[in-house]
Length: 466
Image (cartoon, rainbow, N blue to C red; front, side, top):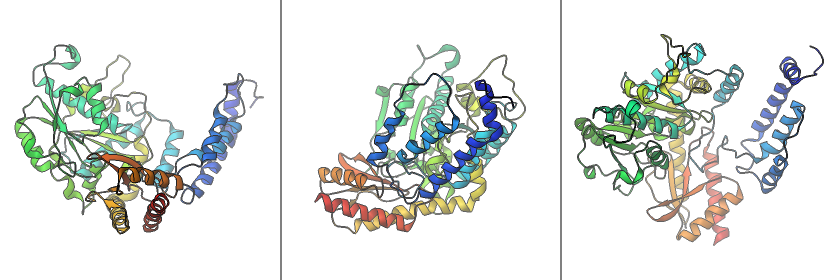
């Protein structure tokens, strides 16, 4: 290798000597060695040290080792330890170790399964995982899957497919004729619909003011008898796992009614659809297979690394037509070409770590891991309810626990103190007009000791407040 006189020479040298990759591996191991014992949230000092990233972009290239050293020195301490067992703030999930390893390998592959010709391995793994997911979720054999960034995008795709089909039912081609002067689509959903659903409704031009809102019961479930008559111009959006209470809509009753009317049913199953894969919990999703599309996340419950959303749709034509792709340069094949199932073309092969974790765990491992999350949530609610000053506001059907103190003010101050103590991390929400602390148990790493330690932090926080 000649002397590094150009940036190209420098990068060839980095590939040849592998030093920066060895350094990255060393930093990664240092990080993993502390993940279960460190503060769940970064210290004030660590956050303050982020000031070292406030700098002008220099003119000349610098040594790659220096770049990595800065990231590790000031970046690693300022991360949130959601890989550990005591992060309950959002439904984020940890990462199964084999998923981290597979993602690392896939990073070096740097594949894009948008076309089979671009990545035969990416195409094959998407085909295999699609079949596995249909089996795990008990979905119709005709169902197809698109592998996207998260549930927000998955929901957008599912509702886009619905828009295509419901307008086609009225002899309107959305791709050719657009939305102006298009026939009306009715949108029905519950008053506890997730914000990402509302985002998709807005982006797709349905208009949030056009939503027909349905009242929910004390657990956040749509009241089936309040759903109006539907027809084949109706989009009905249901939930598998309320983001606060964890509750499930009555899919069996509601979907049966919707199917008879020819309505399109979309289920937001970001974290809750995974209950379908658990023998002791699959009763929660009974009837969900009667829907038309489903949105689900890998990282929330299966504990894949981030960037692992999935849209599932039983109407292949509607999904591929809604997300259509054409171009003289596009090379299609007899195998799967992923571009027809997602909005993106330039996307990484995020399916690699999803495949690796499913393969590693198998059906029984998936069952055991997810059931354990439910059991830890039940433990959390039981131990916390035994402490004076805390009330559990929901039935722990899956992995969500809603906690409140005697007043909204005490609840908010207690939550802030818990966050300050950094033993665990929880977030807040609003439930029926009442301030709550929301606990989401969704990490494979959470142990019984982690729960007890976190409950003790709740206890200490309340004691300091009162």
